[in-house]
Image 1 (spheres, one colour):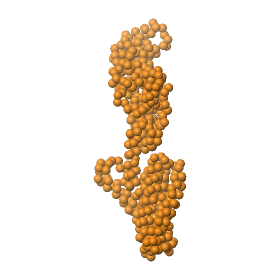
Image 2: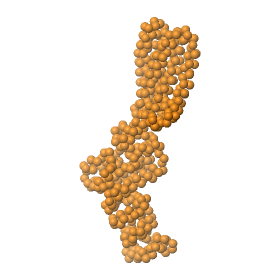
Image 3: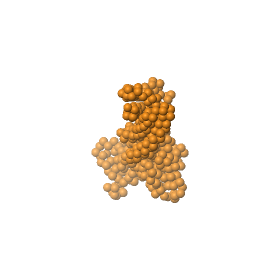
Image 4: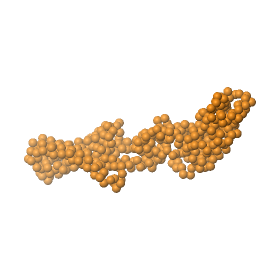
Length: 459
């Protein structure tokens, strides 16, 4: 129907002009028929008709047009009229129009606006898709979505370098590019990035799409922040793009934010390894009684668990009474075992945190620590034997204590390795497996091993 004779088109438009208020209201059969005929005309003809009307009626008719047709008609209007309409309508309607326009038409339109206006509408255009996604999701503060910056300038892939540079020069003196600019398509899907030098080293008429690089790392908006920080550190990136499951560009995470996450997670690990749980605030920001509750819970729990040591000792009370020398070296054995276990635990927890240790190489780590435990246990047993024999001159006691020491060190180092790997496997923070939990557990196991081995040697 867009191929009707010019005279017919002029007659239709004339009828609409003469009955404009009726057509806008659409309350009569004639008005409805005229409107249906009107929207079937070529966008260029509709645009020519709109240019003859005042600004108020131009906006009313544009809003009344089907969405698919609105941008087509808007693109056919003169730049001056486009600018006036854009500045007069609500931001939501302006965004709808801009989203459907091609990049070249948008850059032409921006020539009619001031630099501040360009900055405002370009950001509105780029952020709209992100807002739609972000509004539907309640991001976990510990996720990539919770730490990303969504107010980011991007370049469309279908404009030239010359147009891109012109936009950059006009819209931002504050924008921090961090060495790269992210590129999207008209649906705000991430396509890659370009470097600042790419804009200088290529011809002005080159399309942005032709110089776009593939991202080394693309982050899903729901990814855990600690995983993100470790990945960015691995690739040594100053920034990384964040997308949703459909590939829509939502924002970026900067190296500064990544470093903050690493520091935050390291602090949490220190607190957990000390039996304090998760502390969200600094020492002086945390209410006094909250500190009391956090610290008391673990201490009471460990106190109850520690009571098992007394039960073990009471079971071997006769052995201890007949061999008082065993009591003299009890703290030495238990302390050494706890220290050895904490060393292994710290190494594994750190490895799990940085990603160096993971489920695939867990057995390799366990075997490596087992060999280390045997060698360290052997050396300590020799030193322990000499310490006991040359000070107490009791051969059998020296043998019992040195063998116990070696066994405690091996078991302690194995527990220090196994517990973090096990906790990670069942999705519990491995830091919880560290001291004082490990130390308390090794106290119980160490006392049992000491008493059991001594009873077999000393009778």
